[in-house]
Image 1: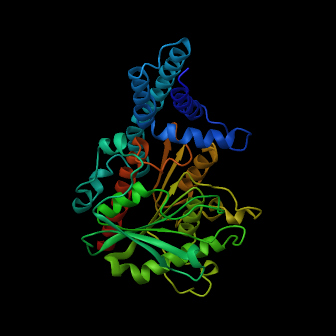
Image 2: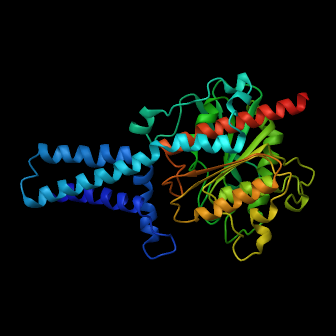
Image 3: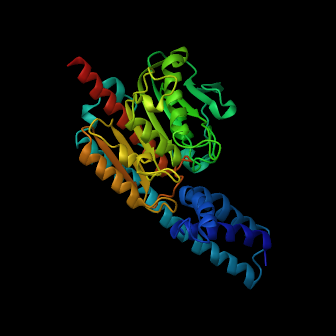
Length: 390
């Protein structure tokens, strides 16, 4: 029995099984199901190439497949490859499904409504080489990261990273992203980096920030931190080429919960103690694999659902239909209620086979969503220009 080969194949097989049939996080196997299934679900091509095909070829080349046990491992690898093919097939259809969601949210002719200077260079195809060969490598040579800028007085929990193109163009729009972690963990420079680097490479100024965590902090402390970030950007981002009059907030999981709350409580002095006069308005919000309920042990007023109003800014909501942490029904409920109430557009992209943290890698799924987010922001910016001109 080739033990090393067996171990590698078994690892991929377990991840593939949990990707196809994830266990809810609250159940006994929920945690290992999530961690094993996530990588296989978002990186099926890399799993097949580096952890199935290459080890199998090496096992044959070294003569390890010389017993019934060895052939059993080969059979397991073949079955696992079929499972990875199913996962990859789901991801291949994501771009068309997201495009349909954009048509529903913005109208069938939404691309034609984007100003020419903003539509130039909008990507229509995935970066296949990066997806296939370098899905975990997130950096770009044309993007500079300015790390650990302080926006508050809470030490390392009030630091942000800023990303901008090395040419430092002027008048750049801003994207602020908040990490997930259940409000008790996580850190900047971890999630949605493919999005931030792509936008920064396209001339945006992007921010990824830490914020205070539980149990030392409670709601609305985290939201106040995000408001401080927005105020800091409005005061300082021009130093890096930004025009912070165009500012989108985004977040993953708990960060999405916080971004939605910030977008739905713009300029509310109750969440701006000591900086009540700061402008914390936003142009739009990007809600990724978010939490939609109330904050821990607090009432419904701590949920974005309770803050929905007719003046809500444009929203793009994306959620995986196999999310084991937050049921997809919660995302559907939020998007439906927001559409029925808000005067602004709502794009709801339901990702087939999507796990919770689908935004970690350069996957087919997330790259399709990155392109949709750029298209969504370009559409919103074009509408704002027309409103100002009118």
